[in-house]
Amino acid sequence: MKKIIVFLLISSLFLSGCWDQRMYKDLSVISVVGIDGHVGDIRGHYAYPSSNSDPTKYIVLEGIGKTMRESRIDANKKTEQTMDVAELTTILVNEESAKKDLYALMDVYYRSAQSPMNAKVVITKGSAKKFLEIKDTMSKKIGEYYFDLITAFEDATIYPKTNLEIAANLMFSEGRDLGLPYLNTSEDKGLPEGEGMALFNGKKYTGEHLTLRESIFATLLGYRKANFVELAYMWDKDDKKAQVAFNIINFKKKKKVLKDGNNIKIQYEIDMPVFITEYPPDHLDRKNVRQQLEKFIKGRVEKDIARMFKKSQDASSDVVGIGEDIRAYHPQLWREGKWKGIYKDIKIETKVNVNVVRSGSTR
Image 1 (cartoon, rainbow, N blue to C red):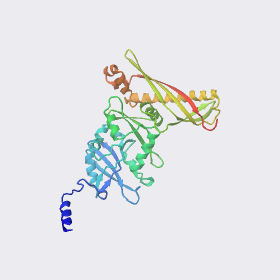
Image 2: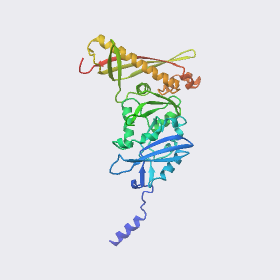
Image 3: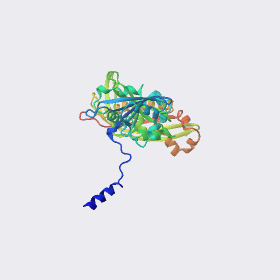
Image 4: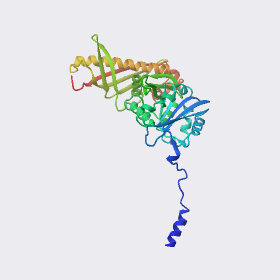
């Protein structure tokens, strides 16, 4: 028995613990970060739980510095625990801050092995700090709240899937520009609400954003349909207003690149079967009524797509990724000059074929 005890004591000397172990009780787990200012003068805002019994309660630390790292060091001095970003879900960036160089602000997160690459990156209208001042109306953890909010927009095909990793890839892409969620706050309760997609040119926010509806078509044309797509319009029909709402069942697109001398034209042809979810005039069992409705939807969708492309071209933001196809299938056009210079002046035409395949349980 004594030999066994001696053996165990000696063996224990060779056992090593977890040298990099981090205990939650010693950490302030940061779930959301807000960024205001520019490199040289930055204010970072760091949200972490203040109560173990009520996860909706949280504290926001503010750090000031010339860089994001210095800002974080300054904020860390104001808490009795060490700040930890391993559970970071969302980074909120002031629109003015993003106009200079978004990657310079994000660099501190790309260089840390602890940073979760699936964290969302969001552009805010005005100070990012105010988006962390919603404590009284918070129904869940603030990190969970923002992550679920952006994910819901992605599921509705309003935004393409975005996170830290995807944002970095697109900031350095030559054939496609970055588009990020653009949030505002409601006037009544100050709650975050989606306002559209922030358009980037390389690493810089252009200062322009698409509307929510335009964002849907940018996502559909540049990426793919997610879980669902729902749209609604008002139709001035026979001197009366009729509401028209529908779900897009499928969205098939074909693209042609045509060149006539120095002029480049992009032609899209889109097949779009829809399911009508609201149309009080009814009688969709009649062919002529369905055709009139299909013509109305076609016209409105084509106008929205045209507006989306005009905004994107004016901002020199190829958020749909036309440049990727040009480089892959038309390298001679790619080599002729800088794509952004060509992109602003190309003509883009869209033809949409709408087919009402379902009209609901009524006629």
